[in-house]
Amino acid sequence: MAVPPTVSATPASLYVGDLHPDVTDGQLFDAFSEFKSLASVRVCRDSSTGRSLCYGYVNFISPQDAINAIEAKNHTVLSGQVIRVMWSLRDPDARKSGIGNVFVKNLSDSIDNMGFRDIFGKFGNILSCKVVMSEDGKSKGYGFVQFESDESANTAIEKLNGTTVGGKQIYVGKFVRKSDRVLPSPDAKYTNLYVKNLDTDVTEELLQEKFSDFGKIASLFISRDDNGTSKGFGFVNFDNPDDARRAMEAMNGSQLVGSKVLYVARAQKKAEREQILRRQFEEKRKEQILKYKGSNVYVKNIDDGVSDDALQELFSQCGTITSAKLMQDDKGISKGFGFVCFSTPEEASKAVNTFHGYMFHRKPLYVAIAQRKEDRQAQLQLQYAQRMAGLTGPSTAVIPGGYPPLYYAAPPGIVSQIPPRTARPGFNRRHFQWSLILQDNIGKIGAGCFRRVVVTLFHLCLIHNSPLNRSHHQKIQAISRLLGARIPKEVIVMVLFMHHGSHLLKVPSSGFAGKVSWL
Figure (cartoon, rainbow, N blue to C red):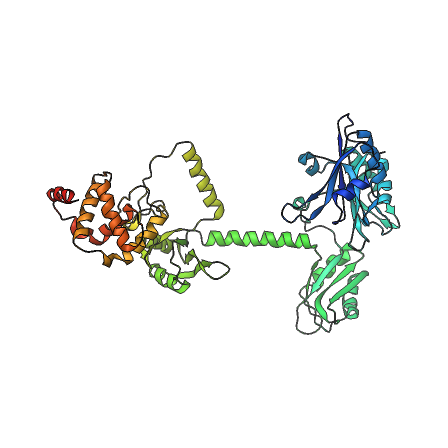
């Protein structure tokens, strides 16, 4: 009898799994319509594609009807597919805890879901059980049983593990998630060996002859393509683990026929092999990070017309470059940033001090020592937390190259050789784009009256930090119309001063009054 984990007078919900992809809400409702207190059904679907997720929920007003539905409908066929019906566990922690979950393998092909349930049902209340099937409906030889309690699961493991069911000795143990599985120790026992670097003319008979010297072979196999040509690898499975170990130690690195050296090792599952490769990749990555720590330079705000060679040529002035790479999208268009790796950290520091704020193809470069993504995220989170807590004061960063902080602040401790100049507040990326337009058209601006505008505006805005009045605004808009674009006053003041400021600073302060009256 299917007893719910907690029987109460409240409405009951059932989980229905292994649904056929074509089953609709209506079909699911019809399948359970014989129970009078059926309230609602739902087949869960992907929110973006609308495809069935192959499971759903059936809700009853009466808990007793839910119990009857489990007993009547569990492991029955719906749209040609055997379904599972169990109590719905809304608590995700309960679903993921693994409590009472048992893994069973080496099952006979004759055991189906009903037979599987009969085998384990005597050890306690089963919430769910399933024999994993292939697409053609044949058993894959393993399954899962979830008991209501760990005690029932432990009893089933103790009583059934190693017993013979359906002519085969089954394995019954605690289910362990793939992410939690530990790699076998070097002393683990094994019988199956993986052999590669086989010549194409090596046959099963030759392999049998060479490996049988170490013990009785249970099975042997050479992988071949559709034409029967050897793929160069195979498997040798011994009866005795000690024989397999001796064969591996003796045959690894030896030669059978030809010049190829054999590789012989314990056969591994795909998941285990991927885990080993992932670990090796992480170790190699950490070695590379330590090796080039402080030697890799991050460069951004790079013009679209700059190539890898141009970037390398620029930074080669600071030392030996091992690599220079511009990041590009799928279409081969520059993303505006890249990396330059030097042979020593000293050369990288020299590049940062030399080229941070450097005008390259009319754009000021941002150059800093490259950081790992994790370190950068931690730093940004710390800055954000400090800002939210009100712990940070006004920025004291020095912006190299005499340019305002259009995209960035200087890296800590970097001071340019060019004297810095404080920018007006509110100068942003769009202003910078307009300033490029203004610089390209600077020749259109007369050296007479507009120069007087620059002198006055520079004096009012940048020296006394006074606000512009309506007259000033009109003169600025005149320049904007001349260029065919509505360019902010901050841009015009900054760019014109950059072009004419060298001699404007020599104008005596007494002359400013006349300029103001002229405006």
